[in-house]
Amino acid sequence: MTKLSNEVIKDNMIKFKNKNISFIMDCYGNQNTNLIDLVEYPFAVVKIDRNFAWYAMENEKAKKILEEMIVMLKSVKKKVVVVGIETSEQAAAFTKMGSDYLQGFYFSVPLPAEEFIAFLKRM
Image (tube, rainbow, N blue to C red; front, side, top):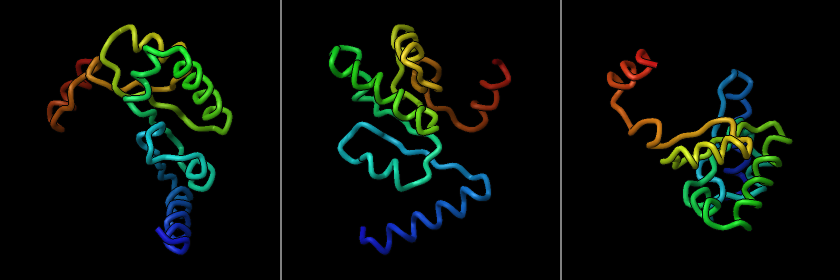
């Protein structure tokens, strides 16, 4: 993207934000996301990449980095979602780290709209 198109995107995002429409940064922690995007664009929520989250479950250094990422994101008023949750152990670990939300097959597989509504009614 050129600088001009980045400015147009940012300006449009701010206009939507002013109308109470939020944006989510997806896949944070992979090679396509960076800290400048967190500073420059008005993301309300940041979704932690599944691959990094899983790696953090097996690697102490990655776990420490993820814990600090969550602290950093929350300190600049971002909500945090960890994706790829498939076990109760993962759910407990990421909740303990401070994740605001969890997403994954542990809770439900992707559902068509009608089944999703029925799922919510059973909750």
